[in-house]
Image 1 (tube, helix red, strand yellow):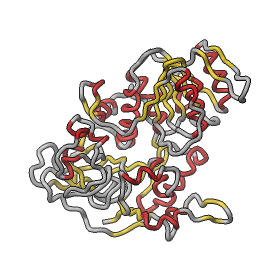
Image 2 (tube, rainbow, N blue to C red):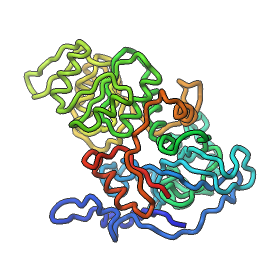
Image 3 (cartoon, rainbow, N blue to C red):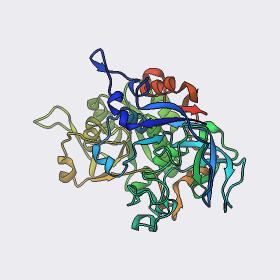
Image 4 (cartoon, rainbow, N blue to C red):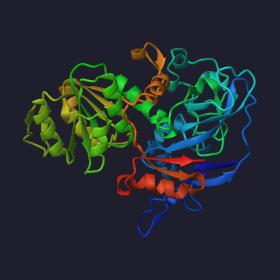
Length: 405
């Protein structure tokens, strides 16, 4: 069986410098951290486990950060001590083999894969978070139990990942995908990330801003439109790329960077006052928007988000930020709420329903505006071109890139 295996002991190779600058594809060049391997076909011998053959598996921005060993905080390695993994956590596929005691699925079933592993999957007693239905915040990610360490599929060489011909999955991680086109089904994971982020905000007004028209930004926009049909959603783009897609996803308006223009445009849209500090170049809004969903989370977008919010507004960090130098004064001066969000789980706002279950339902509904998000699909053996396209993003006309094993 073929699999794309990431070996982080090759991290030095991943940061190769070519002619004085970082090589975009260094991580998957010869000697890099990612290589195609022939590995044994995983067998579902444990009760409740199955093998899924991926139909499509997405390339995520966090995958690229792992491969390049850059852009992620070293602190996170405390919870994810994995040194070798089969990549790919955005997976839709077909059940190929079932283990003992499986009752929810059968061979040949089309499925969505929720990749996170919980204590029970590892044969461990539930931690407090898993017992509360918050397995995405499991307090034992660093423990293997009788399975493996780490957060789950796509970050382990034991259960594997979607960038392969087969991955082991517990039946409790599966959601039926019959009747869902693969190009929509492969979006279940990022759409669940987006829905979980949207639900972190307890609506307290009528206007929000979504920063970033990439996959997650588009998914957040589409989820907000499903949850709040009357909500005013402004999407912030960088350049012309993404503006049309943001509108198709449900944006009420699209404004373009730079930040000064965004602040002026949003102030005019929501009727906020634009205050110009005596010290500093950028203005700040008084009476701004109710929430900002930052799907980029760099220093500049965090700063922009805080400036856009009204007093007691909510900033939701959806992007995978690491170290950033930011003026946090608006947080205490205007009593802002800053919320982090990670993946998905069981949602109190949905009556305890799993995020993936809700997304699986929405993916069957044309009102969920996600068509066209997958812009490029490559064969598994063409992974180098796929990853370079994903790395180039708007320059290559790419939103979501997928691999087809």
